Structure formats: structure tokens, C-alpha cells
Image 1 (tube, rainbow, N blue to C red):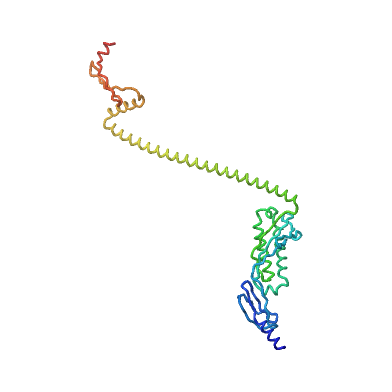
Image 2: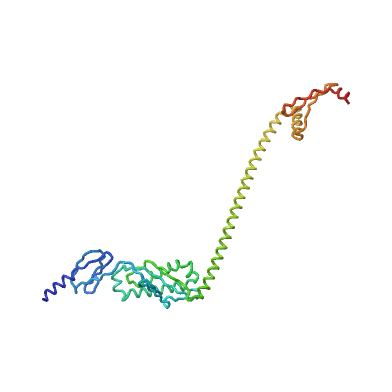
Length: 310
């Protein structure tokens, strides 16, 4: 019977299984031999020579400041009450995501690793909140506070060397201790938001006007450049005309001078009729220069006839 009991004990304690979500540690007379993380069936020496400690590889959640069970949330305000850097009281709770990364250290470096983690979380959160302003803790600074708490907590856990790793830190609620203070702070926050909105609207209006002014400036510069180019081209054309006219003047100065006088009169008196006359004695003849309107020229008039009519 003793032999049968021994054989049964050996058969039952010489093998073990590791699940996909588990990791195991083999102990030989209480001393750690090796860690096992491969899932499946494994064999060892029978108890009491060797034993196995099985730990989960899943991600755990540490709830600081509250406890949620069966859909109900229970708060612990005494644990979450802390003072900010500008000497205001807030209630802050958070969730820490962690997992076991070294089973040997988790089993033997601390009597209760979960308690160590909880105390380190409390110390890290109080330290960061104690160096932050209340506005940051209640509004836009939560992400930075979370990052700082995670860094500080990770450093503490690394120093404590309890075989766990911090994956994430998430602030759940950061609020003021009573309704009156919360309402006053809400009013201040609303006023600040209104101020920021007005500032943003003013900046938007200023930028719009600046853009319009820049556009008008560019348009004026563009028109000025175009006018400049046009005047330069007109000046070049005038110079070319003048040079051509000067060449004609050098060849026939009298004819050119008379033509210039006639063209000037046409420009000064656009509606007047101009006559070119030639006096060869008693009779003065003239030649009318008319516009191209198919009007028949008037007949020549003799000077003597005009005198007789007079």
C-alpha cells in the first residue's frame, strides 16, 4: 500500500501543463531552477523534490482610488485626496495596466508585489499632482500628468525589482472635493474659454485683414509694374518715332516742319477744317484737307470775286 501510494504520488506530480496565457517556474527544494513559458505538457521530478508555480501572462489592472465590481463603483476619497502644486485639494484616481515579466522576482523579491505596486502608484501620483497646477490637473494637462506618473512609477518599480512592468497609466477622474468649489472653478474655466474664443476670433479677423492687405499690396505692385512696363514701351515707341521723324527732318527740313505744324493743328483743333493755300498772283487757290467722310470738296474761290462780293 505504501508503495502504491508512492507510485501514485510520483505519477501525479511528475508532469504539469502550461496554458497559452500562463508561465511557470520550477522549484527544486524551494530554489528556482528555470522559467517555462512554452505552452504544453512538461515533466519534472516528483514532489517534494520539485514543484511548479504557475503565473498568468495576461495584463492586470490596478484600480487606485476606487473599486469596480459587478458594475458598481465604490470610491475611496481618503486615498485619492491630494494637494496640487498651487495648494488646492483635488480627488484623483487612476488605472495602472501592468503584467508579470519575471516570475522568479515576482515570487521571491517581495512578500506582496501587488501591495508594493499599489503604494508605488500612490506615491507617484501624489508626487506628480503635488508639482502640478490645478488647472493642468482638471483640464488640458491630464495627458502630461499621466505620462509623468507612468515614468516615475516605472522607475520606482525598476528599483524595487519585483518582476513586473508598467504598460499604461490612465487618469480616470480628477475633480474638486465639493460642489461649491467645483461650480466656482467651472465658472472660471468657462470665462477662460470665452476669453480664448474671443482671442481666437480676433486673431482670425486680424489674419483675414492682413491677407486682404497683402493681396491688395500685391495687386497694386502688379499694376504698377504693368504701368511701368507699358510706359517704358511707349517711351521706346516715342523715341523710335522721334528718331524716324528726325531722319526725315534732316533730309527735308522745310517740308517736315510744315507737316508737323499741320499735324499739330489737327490734334489741337480736331473739328476744324484746314485749307492749304498758294498765292500765285491775283488769284489765291486753296486745297481743303477733309476727313474721310466722302464729302465733296468745295470749288475754288478767286480772291477778286470775294472782294467784289464784299
